[in-house]
Length: 186
Image 1 (cartoon, rainbow, N blue to C red):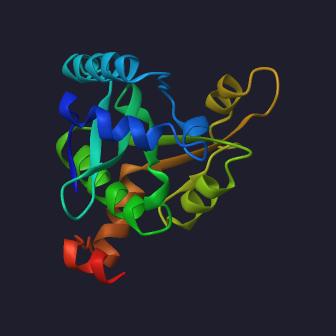
Image 2: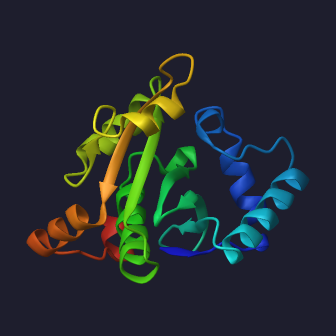
């Protein structure tokens, strides 16, 4: 479902990213395939330096359909950024990708906290975040970070996923790895 970023996936990812329902919500925007290739190369190098964690989201046939990233890593915490190509919205890929990503970063990569900054107008992402039982709405509990995100006006809502809350959820409910057949039937 997830794999490390590779340049060979850039063409397919670029085509998904430029859709008008996706593009406004992508953190690292590119106006051309060449620019996207350059940004992907920079992303791979930044991961090697420990500045971020980035994975390509794959469909059940191994085709790239989006990315999931942890940006601005400091003090074992970072900001989540995820996008999927428009044809894959609402089909369960986002939850499956997040589960696999959280499993990796919390259990193998020493991350303790994941933050999500979501634009006020991005209702789809806010609803998706609020469905997750281990997410805390953090506008008030993390006021310093919230203020840094919204210097002149409130543009973002802030959400937090602490490792301990995520782990408790997994212990109580289990981590169910989805397989390709499940997605095909959905």
